[in-house]
Length: 338
Ligand code: TYM
Image (cartoon, rainbow, N blue to C red; front, top):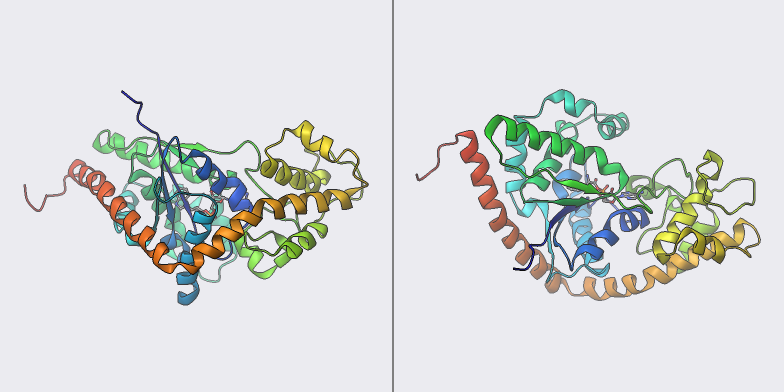
């Protein structure tokens, strides 16, 4: 009998431009696993609204995000690709999990502390964000959650919530494992290598990062402006002052799938950081060119996007139903028909 495929679940927020960090840290892992695993990938609009979103922009961003996932090489015939709010079981399970999650587990999450500092008024949803994320993952028999380094704490919390539920109501949830890439798990901002590349900073500071749809000239220009240090040594080093160079080398390594030695050999004859920056910029342009071409074709075919969304959401709803019924049964909810 053929071994059953592992189930992979991951999500991405439709909040602004997808960038190279999203691609290297998460999306390319999803593409790589789609032949061997059953991939369920969700555009998490319910997470996006934990911070105010303009309605028209949210709608556009959902379509654009889905289009970019397909253009990155995800095959809708192999994976489920849907919008979170199309499957109401996410919200339903989140409520149930809220009732087994101590509030102290949420107030100590660093992402909550960071994000709430930048908000004038903090929504209850922002505090509850990781519980909804746990619900996303636990609605399916998820084995693996491929994410960037910044999501590690959320996956650990998911395991804690699942463990607590299982302890209170009996074995119901499988405990998922995070999968964090060895190269490119935290791509840093090109304007500030002490800060991770993020969609929210990119919105207001275009030279902070590389958007997946950036024109080649813009990519090269942003790389040329990348912050490095006052030295000239092109090395992989953990020294704080080499963070900018290390970030550029990691981007290059992730996109070319080379070893550290091969990467350094490519830049052995570079005359200073100028050549490094242009070399990295060109590698990004080469890598993104086919993705951008596919995106233009996909975006023009709205019927195709709609049919992917509809088919995937239907399948996801059917899969979640069984899990949700088991959760309710375990908790003692009276069934409508017994
Ligand atoms: P989001 O939308 O912030 O990011 C999507 C994915 O991209 C990764 N990522 C990065 N990786 C490397 N370097 C960076 N600079 C970088 N920036 C982002 C993230 O780690 C993530 O994997 N909470 C999640 C969305 C989510 C989710 C889930 C993820 C909701 N439910 C269930 C996994 C499972 C988020 O905000 O991702």
